[in-house]
Length: 154
Length: 114
Image 1 (cartoon, rainbow over the protein chains, first blue to last red):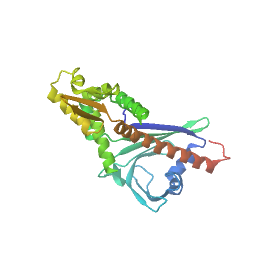
Image 2 (cartoon, rainbow over the protein chains, first blue to last red):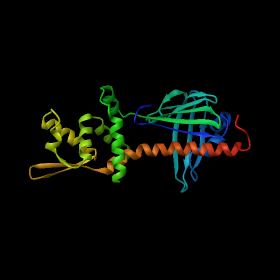
Image 3 (tube, rainbow over the protein chains, first blue to last red):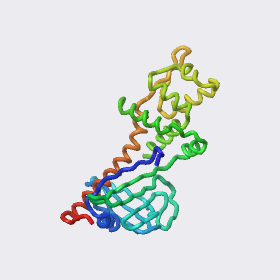
C-alpha cells in the first residue's frame, strides 16, 4: 500500500472462510454477487487455480453487453488468499492493457471472517518515471487536499 | 471511457511534479498572477511558463491575460474528476464485498460460522 492509486476495503462477513471460498470458487455462486442487480453476470471461464483464466460478460438492463475481457488468477490459496489481475489472461499470457491487480484475503474472526480486498491500480508511465526519479513525495497529500477542495467546490 | 482515461493520465502527469503541485497549492488560496506564482522558484520565467502550460492543458487551471498580466485560477471540475476516479473504484469494491457478504450470509444463515 502507500500508493495513492491503491485502495483497501474490508468487512466482516458472518460466515466461515470456506463458505466465502465457495462463493468465489463456484461460478454459479460467483455470478450472483459479482455485479449489482439488475446487471446480469455470465461466467465464460472461471479457472479457479493459480494461472487460471477468468472471463465474465455483463448484461445491462437495457440489453447492452459488456465484455469483461479475460483476466488471470495469480495466486489461489484455499480459504486464505486470491490474487488476480487484468494484466494477464489464463496461462499468464499478457493482455494488451493492464489496469489493476487485486488481493483478496480471508482471515478468521470471532464473528465469522474478516474479508479484505485491496486493489492496486496501474501507474501510468509518466507517474512511474517520476516515481523512479523520486518526484513522488507529497503526491498523496496533494491529491488528498485537492480532492477535499474539489468536494467543497463541486 | 477512453477520453476519460486519457484526461486522467494528463491530470496525474500534471500533478506528478513538485513545482506544479506547489502552483496548485498556491492557487487553492485564490487566483494569482504568473509573476507571483513564479516568485518562489529559482527557474527562469520561460521554464516556469512550461509548467503553467502543462497545468492548463490538463484542465486543472485556467489563465487569462489582461493587459500585461496573466492571472491563473483553479478549475475545480478537473480536480473533482481526479477524485472521482478513485472513489468510483472504492464504490465498486465496497459493493462487491457487500454483495458477497449478503449472498454468503443468506446461504449459510442458521449455520454457525466455523
